[in-house]
Length: 454
Image 1 (cartoon, rainbow, N blue to C red):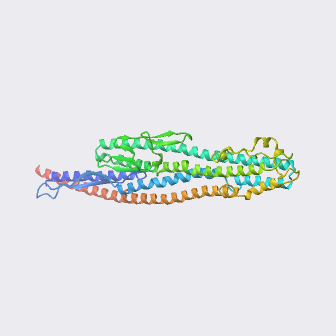
Image 2: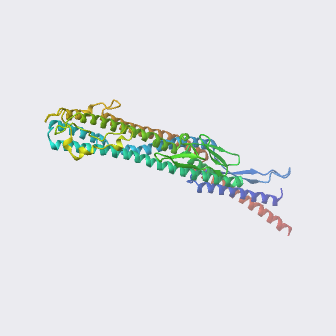
Image 3: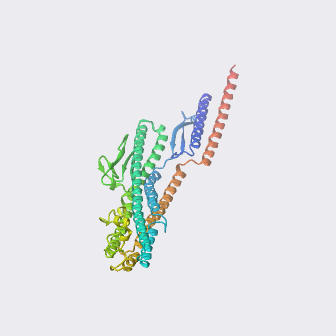
């Protein structure tokens, strides 16, 4: 190879080492960028031009990322399960807060209600004792209606989050479609940053709703729901719709006019739907059963007795029209609230008799519909909510550990290590210095030859 050819070799080598330093610098600049995959400079040796040449040096083949599709797919599969449990834990927490603490909620009002009847049994002719029973009965009814309202508010708040998730899903699918369009229209060497954004967006989408992701050879991604409903196909995205349905007005999830609410099985959206359509209605049903059983039992006993004037007792609570909605509609009988003397305490029309007051006081230990006493029924509801929240939090922690482990393993493969980049920077720097020295030596040799010709 001629000296001028060696200058070309040195020049290409300098450019290659500079390119390597550029890649290292870009890696270090993005060490904290979410979703960034470490870049590697690919260099290749140029073949010799003839048998008297050792080679023509090095050339830049390009740059590639260390992305591992296997770990990306694992994240797409695990993120929905972790986010589903997170949604369950957060939303069920609203119900747990609504129930209140032990001794400060319906359990306390039940105790005061039955205690008031016990005091009336001790003084069946006392006007004050009768007023106290009516007051505690009214407070108990308001406690039931307030509790039903709070649980229904929790369901409405969850429905609002369902609508928010659907809107966010549509934003993400539109972004993926836009990225697909850009990736397909650009040379592969210029799409690495787009692929990083695509991966991060796919992960976010999978956290919201379980997906099937198919990555094509050109770098674009096709995305479907677990049941095969298309979300992204090439540069086209297919939005989900939140459609309010009677009688609740809650949002159903529709895709192309088809209700797919029942198909959403994992992801944050699935957790919200599970709470809104399953857990919360179940809690309300337990509360309604307690309210209906209590009102029916108390009304039956009260109607069998006699008031202060010897008149047959009527209803204590407004009679429930059915189990469903009993808690929300619970109220003390208007006539009794207006005139506490109508409260029945006697079992026979005899002044001073306390048979009915004592039986009503003992209702606290009477099994209602379902075979549980009022306290047991309330405790059962509180336990069910607490158990569901605890289970969701435990499962979320377990799933989060799995996701974190996958991310750590993926980062060990494709993440940026400052120590590794520092070592690579030193290699490229020294290679650059050596090639610069080589370039100087060839240049000086040429200068020497040129001076001899003079």
